[in-house]
Image (tube, rainbow, N blue to C red; front, side, top):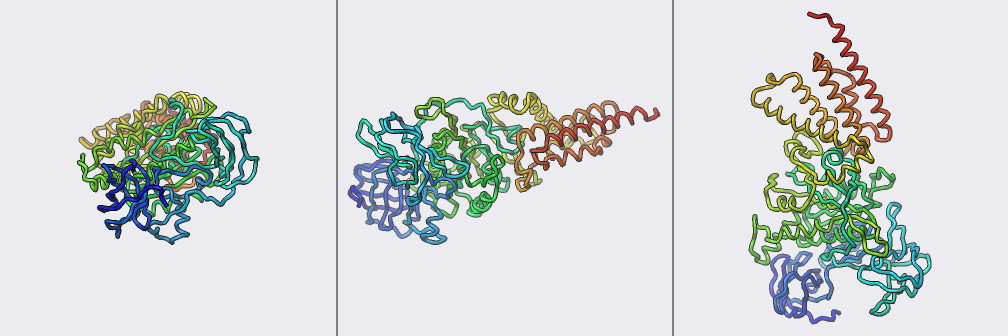
Length: 597
């Protein structure tokens, strides 16, 4: 029974409920609505009346029913058992709900986010008498083969350890230590709670000079994102936003992946559930689900919980960041999340902004993306680093990038991967438009690429991008006056750009080899294409026929190179370079031996 006096429902408008007799209620406090115990959150307080955003279907709820306060905000449970799990937007474990109520989630049904009965092998890393502060590691639990769960002391407490359990098996309800604080003795468990709307504290944000390697050539080579960075993927229906995010979730070199399916179709989340356990991490060979958490609020689930799902996802990401991990959060899509904001705002009768979105749309988006970053985490180790990278998909109606969600997102993020409808219609995937996209991390990541991949990386990227831009200019000339207006040297540019687009930028998400491309393979593949271009340009300048150069067998070898495994690619690249030298030399010899006319 709640310690607070219950309120009474006055009005119900969709997911919004107004209750009276709520004196003392606080903003964002969690409440239980009606006899079915629907979960809701207070989003407005006026005198003794509270406006509640209900996270479940409110059909059948009527005035006069009770509202019970809990006294605490919407929070998530943080501890062993998060990894390889599938939650809804308020952190209810969906597999448990399936066992309780079948395929359809019953209203008012609840379940503990973390299993209270399962025992975990706990190894203490501190001892009795140690002085500890929030963020220190109390011990470790081998949660999966890919993630070692570091049990953290909650950020808001510190003191001297009076007791610590020995190594052994414990449940989440078993105390593993006792801490003497200035407010008395506190029992510490392997789990603790944290309010989702409050960012977890960090010592300081630091600049990121390390890229988040995604295995997608166009991203890693042309428009990279740093660890702790922010990116947006806007695109029209059918351009491949979800598949691109799936690829990032599968192959990004973060230790932990949090995938938030916010308002998307249920079959897309089903695909994630079916494919991720079968896929292997290219670095460890283990199933990808061993380092993944899924948060789902699909299009047929209550709309109000969409907003919570984003905060739930980023809080889970911050928790693993505080352990010292690099975490990548995929949000698909922030447009559906913004639509939930718009609907609830309309129910609240707030003054609408552009296209009906609330005036605070930009600030709410910023609240999410600003929780990304590479930080020095709190704790006694002042040099321990962790990061949260956030990649949000945006679904503008009709592919209109001038609509409010896209524009407000672009003001916040530093990487823009613009998906193009014409490219998608030509079956060019990923359909990222290389002329509209950009990355503001290029300068800060340049030194890493020079050191770890090759000193020519930046120059190669600039040359390739210049070639693509020149190709676009020449194509406009062809559209105006026809192909006959181009010189032979200009045709060389068109052919080289075609090689970049077909042999480098197009990457199959379904191919067992081409789905992931290491940065070393990416660099060598582009080097081969640009060397072919230079030799083709030099040969044509000496009088070699362009068509003869295009008919060389080595061009087909380059086209097939992207489906060659990364581990053996260097050997293949050297073989192709040797063939390229010999075949172009043969063309030059033919030209010299050809009798003058």
